[in-house]
Amino acid sequence: MANTYTQINIHTVFAVRNRKACIGTAWKEELHKYISGILRNNTHKVLAINTMPDHLHLLFGFRPNQSLSDLLQDIKGGSSQWINNRKLCPGQFRWQEGFGAFAVAVRDIHDTIHYIQQQEEHHKKVSFRKEYLSFLKEQEILFDEKYIFSDLIDT
Image (cartoon, rainbow, N blue to C red):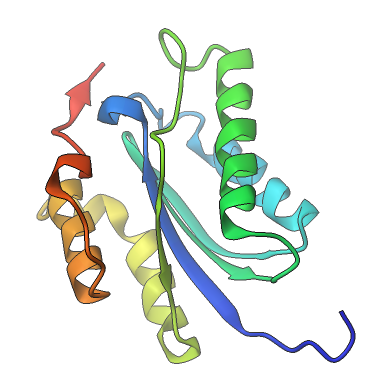
């Protein structure tokens, strides 16, 4: 793409299907590496990634050589297969349908990276549902309450 210059930074968030809390601390770093590899193989730049037991935050520099939906389908499908092949969760692991994706200005990248890195502390005070609703409202995204995540399901 000669003469194409972009600076597109995306903070995406998606949850485990039914918000099942099964992403383990013992293997989440390997999951992060696997997802980072998918991004790099698709020529995108990983800026930050972190998972909680029931959801994932990902910040990356997005290149417009593929659609965001196709990229996230690759990430979610590939990582689900990786988790299931290793039998890391009881039963079949799946990510929820859909995702949240939010543009991040260059001036806000460092704050967003810090925010993603501090998820464990953040969620001691704020639920994932409340966090996600605040993203939608802050970005003025219209949403239907019936499609917003349900309460957490422990394994």
